[in-house]
Amino acid sequence: MCILVWAAVIAAIGVPLYLAGVTRQVDDITLNVVAAVTIVVPVTLGLAALESSGWQATLGKRMLRLRVQLRDVARPPFGVALLRNALKVALPWTIGHAAVIAIVSTSSSSATPPWVWVLTLAAYALPIVYIVALFVRTGRTPYDAAAGTQVAQTA
Image 1 (cartoon, rainbow, N blue to C red):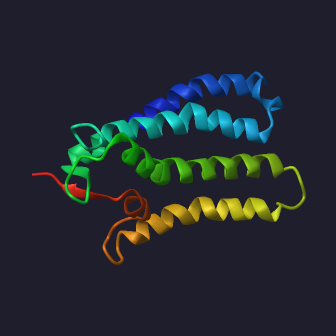
Image 2 (cartoon, rainbow, N blue to C red; image 1 turned 120 degrees about the horizontal axis):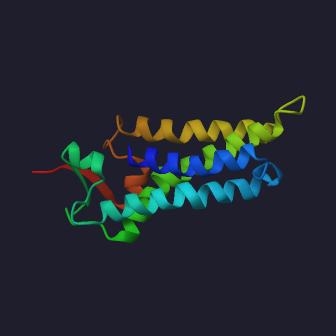
């Protein structure tokens, strides 16, 4: 819910700029950078701050009585939580943004370039891999394995 509120604030600024024609002259790379800086980076930093705090959880995890911890039950330092959320949130979100912007910018051409299809496939495949990982082997996602963290029930 907090992420949606932040996205709504950014949209309240971005949509009028788009409708006024201000952002139509901006190239695709700049649009991706602006999207990352205004939405993805603040959200990723916020999630990492919450998971590395004394709560060891985002608001949703707290409601479900879950926490993020290192394997030895310790609170993850900010850098570890940032790596976890960069892989969990920032990477798929940025790929998704890039795919949508590429689809929109190439929609006027007769055929969609193959790289746009690859980007779109990656945008869908990565979250699917994360979900499937919950149900195989140890039940840990690739981003938890990479960060050395796990999600556990709180007492």
